[in-house]
Image 1 (spheres, rainbow, N blue to C red):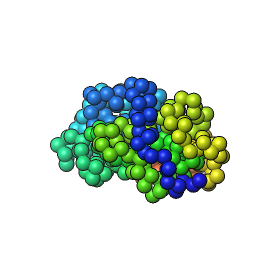
Image 2 (image 1 turned 45 degrees about the vertical axis):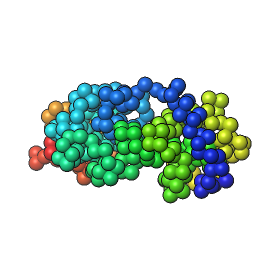
Image 3 (image 1 turned 60 degrees about the horizontal axis):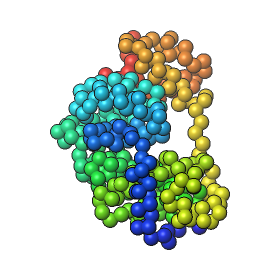
Image 4 (image 1 turned 90 degrees about the vertical axis):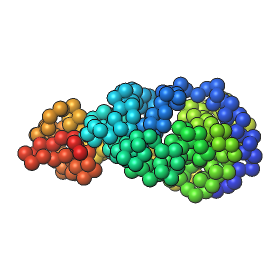
Length: 300
């Protein structure tokens, strides 16, 4: 079977067990509580990209306490968003979230828009985030395809161990075919399949004994055939430009005043890589160079 194989299992037979499992086993996460609102959902979606829940939780709580509404974040300097982002990684997400908050304040009166198209038009928001906010915050019917959901669908419906490295048109078509018709139920399905992939149908050491649809899972019924597609991308960090960028940003985050070049030079011995990383941070708008040879997080 391949990733383009259509599921022969009626979608409705998957909905009840997966949603029922979710009702019993869903984690109590702050962005799932009613008081989080659409802004809390949006903040969580930005933070959770490529970052585990355990690392996001403390930063999310501090962020929402400081900036409970988009206008609160929009009124602050973008550098403060980068500083508060801490060590979550991929700090450009902080700038994108700040830009989205500004657009929400200017275009939508400070309220996260409900319409999928309006969400998609916000800076820094792609198809996944727009669908996730529309679904999780407003209970709308959208296919929400993160890594966990894609893995559940690849195994249960397509009979393969892992989805392709990048989301395909075939995956999107399958996800739409599996969506419940009713909006509220579709939103629960989106959250439930994501949680199933995060807690049970994991990338390694999946626990089929706990899976509510193991009896219908095409991959398990086929004997769990090994992955046959292109090699899965591994994430390396040590010695990369990402590590250098992180160390440079750490110096800037920890200082309330601009820092001299010498302070940045001290964090990495290799000068060419260090300069390349610093130039990249400046180009990305994460660091602002000053005329006196010092650097700071951006103020505007």
